[in-house]
Amino acid sequence: MTSKPQYVIIDLLKYATNEGWEMIKVLLIAPYQGLAETAKKVNIPDDIQLDVTIANLEEGVRVAQLAEKQGYELIISRGGTATMIQDVVSIPVVHIDITGYDMLRVFTLIRGIKKGVALVGFANISQGAATICNILEFDVKMITIKSRDEVRGHLEKLKQQGYSVVIGDVITVQVAEQVGLRGVLITSGKEAVTDAFEEGKRVYNFFRRVNNQFYYFQETFNSMPFPVILLNKDGEIIEKNLMYEQAIQSHEIVKSPTISTIIKKVLENETNQWAELEGENNIYEIQAFLVSKSEAIVGINIHSSVLKTHIKAVKIIGNPVHIPIIGESDQARRIREAVQQYAHMDGSVCIIGESGTGKYTVAQEIHFERYGQDAPIMVIEGSHLTNETSEINNIQSKLLAIKHGTLILRDIDSIPFEIQDSIQNLLNHIPSTMKVIVLAKESLDKLVYEGTFDEILYHKVSKYSLHLSPLQERKEDIGAFVDYFLTEFHAENGDETVGMKQEAANYLMQFDWLGNLSQFKKAVKELSMMTTANYIELSHVEELMSKYERNKDKNERISLDGTLQEIEQKVIKQVLQEEGNNQSKAATRLGINRSTLWRKLKQ
Ligand SMILES: Nc1ncnc2c1ncn2[C@@H]1O[C@H](COP(=O)(O)OP(=O)(O)OP(=O)(O)O)[C@@H](O)[C@H]1O
Image (cartoon, rainbow, N blue to C red):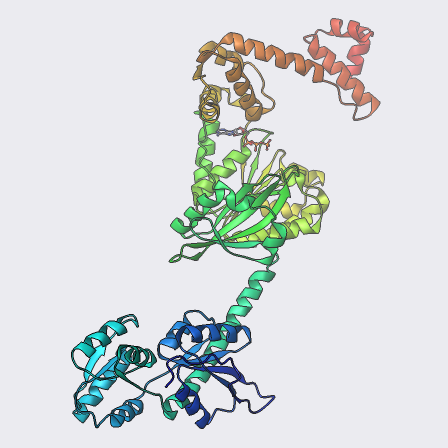
């Protein structure tokens, strides 16, 4: 036995048989010369193309790494060399076991030596050996090691105790020779090598099946038509698909604080999460899902990205929030009741009201009552929809991905007639678990009557309806809205303004607020900015409202739509209104006499 096996690469002995067969390319790395010789003598299965090389421990590892690169599909080796190899290669490694025959052989070899024999090896050797020694009544000291580093210490101690022969694996024999003991190697016989070939075939076939599956998953992952990344709990990328590499140049997505929040939420709640994420120039829509709870891995699909300058027709709100329905008016109470009722009923809801009356807010609240934050809201802006089929398809695929949540379709009354058909089709294929809420400024039945709204779509979207009154019909809520909006600005901007004097609020109530809550909220914001003290005073309101009136006067132009007679009617009515219905004054301004004015009014 050579203490340092020579480094023979790969083609030491070649046993290629059965060309053209689907052969498994196997390399046997023999830690000692005799094993290579044994391999020559066994029948190699037809489907194995075997090469044999001799290399021990570190050298064995180097050979194995090279072999993997050269296309070997399976490695067979023995003892510590096999264990070290399996830690560094990603092809299967089969161990040649030490069998009972091998033990018997070695004990028979040394049967003449009656004393001073020890066996040093890992448990797989020492336990079997102990049984055989007992049966044969051999006096052999058994030492079980857990690591090869222990070998030298044990052998030195054995030497001091007068032992002269040590049985063991390659490493034991090598060290024995170095410390001055006689080493006897437990060799592997033909049976063990034959068994290893059979085991190799079994392991290889299993490995190939698993590998194929992994390959299909890898291919699917890579060919997904949208970017996907897998992240660990610290937000580090552990896998990314090709689309991600091609489409997302910068790392703005992973660096965003939204990502760490969403990862935390997915891991805690074990549910999918949606979010919109703002990059430098783009807005990304992302869906996060749990990949592995135990390893804390979260996947992120990036569904779309649009330039910040582009107005989007679709948006997904992943974390809807609760917005209280403010006020003590009958209308406010009625809305609160309706929210409760509609949230727990299936079927579409149509919310109708002038611009800024709070339709979208009420729709969000219905969602929140129904799902809380457990499901997302998909918002479609009807006024931004175009009749591009890709847009409808995009909405459809997102809806299917969401499955569960609320679809809010804003401004349904402004969807062009030619797209209404596609919308109806979209709603027909919507998952039944989605709640549909549509918002309109005009009554849909009126539009159906006028022929500008599809009747089937109308029936589909308005199982229940809710009308919101303009702000001028619920002026008693103005005070509550002022307080609510001031609190909101306080939280957003750290405003010092904490309230409004009663006379200032009373003054606000005198106006019509044709833009309803949207306009009113803007006015309260402007007032809170004008105020340096804690309370908004009457003087602030007067100043702001006179500015509004001046602008209104400038903007109030009569529309030139209609026939000449209709335009004339509009002019007469406007002048009459401005002159406080005083017909003489109006006639003088219009340059006509009173009877002509009267006749024209009757037309
Ligand atoms: N109950 C409420 N509590 C607090 N704020 C509200 C409430 N209702 C409406 N608002 C605020 O008033 C503004 C207009 O509301 P919202 O967008 O819901 O109205 P809308 O009728 O959907 O408007 P539009 O028809 O113009 O789309 C928003 O800024 C919203 O935050």
